[in-house]
Length: 295
Length: 171
Image (cartoon, rainbow over the protein chains, first blue to last red):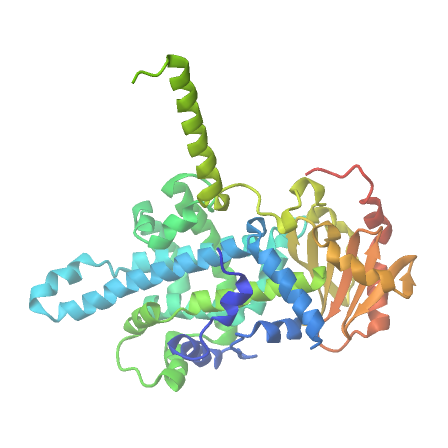
């Protein structure tokens, strides 16, 4: 919470696996994606002016806003961070299981780790809910009616298309197959509330979720996913996303991949930060839009 | 040495009080305390963003207004033509940003009697009732200064000015 959002933006990597995999995926998303890591460039693009005094004013206002806990910008980032850490932890376990399965003495390790589809579905569900929570932290509840809120959400979604495409492919299509979105509700139905607790991110997010107890939170996750699946399905058919196409696109930047698709998903989960990376960029943009309006 | 009973009590209270005070001052409790508002202005003094929502320009078949951000003292919308984003529209309460008022002192133009300034080549700002800032920030290149002023006029400025009266809605 201590680091202002724009400082976080400036600390994002300019190259590396995360950036390469996002660049690969952006081949499938019209409009592409540019890796914004400069606060000044972001402010310039919002206010359309490179006047240094204006930029400095926006920057100062943005830092003041992101330091105020009540405004939620910092809280949204801590949700993203929690999800990111959790993703690394679970995927790290699976990588370890994959390695140790080949070593006879360590074979039992492989039995301990839960690579099941249900856990993967719960993980995706938790990420979707994290997105909803972060949206309300950053944007409040815009408008006076549910329709206004839905419109704001859809609008945000189309701005953050690459981010959503990354969520759908890296956490849905690659690990669960091309029917991931159709299977999602069924898989979540089989999942028990205790599987929620296996994911480290849940502990951090539980306090922000409505309702009390794992059961209520599982309900929140399922309702959030229900809302999201329809929209995400539209995105998949509009962009023609599939596991196969995603692998091809990723191969152009990451190099050839010979393993299975769900192994690629585990690899990406373990070694990239796409969710938090694009999350910081999305929050920074909304923050700068507000700061520019308030100076 | 045996201390008299009242002295023991006083000493105990002083020690306990000192411990509490030291804890409150030295330990990083501020993270958990309520507050953390912008510029440390109490929330009750800031007009809630939801009261600004109805004051935005009305829906139009060609230009669409989608609300995008709403916080205390702030509400923002996107002005779109089709799928093209043309401008950001915002109303904010300057009580948390008094430094924003300075630029209106040199304002040469007026719109419906309120001071109007240009901020760079793409943004126009209007100060209503010495308190609320209404701003149109162009995105792309389809809204010159004259058009931005037209958009500013579309806001319910009268309604906005009436919010500045001392009796503020406390929601």
